[in-house]
Length: 112
Length: 114
Image 1 (cartoon, rainbow over the protein chains, first blue to last red):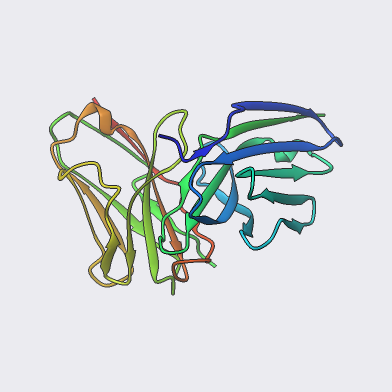
Image 2 (image 1 turned 120 degrees about the horizontal axis):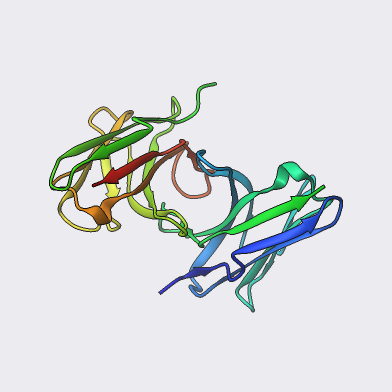
């Protein structure tokens, strides 16, 4: 049973536009959420995180929104750039646990 | 500074053989994690260490899998009697501690069991 779900396997966006990647979770004990970006043949790279006490966190072109009542979070990238093309993973953890639970990922393609 | 390194980058073995995968974490990071990523899936947790001890090994799929971190730095993931279903990318990550610390991942070891 997937506790973290990324229902869109792929997303294609035009350069300069906004990319919105979505993630849903089922475990109400999750209190910390992260987004990782992965290029082929490399390990995942941390992008941005958010604690459950917040509903928004922003870092440059990247903003993560958390809706706890809906158990939903999203990553907004604006403006999107071709170098953003990668697989994006949503991950979550519980305070008492050290490990991360990952979604299956969304492959983002940003076209020039 | 140096990131997390993993060796070998690729390992091809035959069914039934024993393999060892190595992880060198970022210097000073006390927490070390092993994940496994199969095709089309996200990383799946296997085990994590806080210092030398395994704090949580609940993700290890069966007793053919074992990991050690004897001096609290380098870790080795050991797989006995490999099966074709063990084929995956094995990722290692480290962090300053557990909890709200960002995990830094290595490039992974691609294991292929023929």
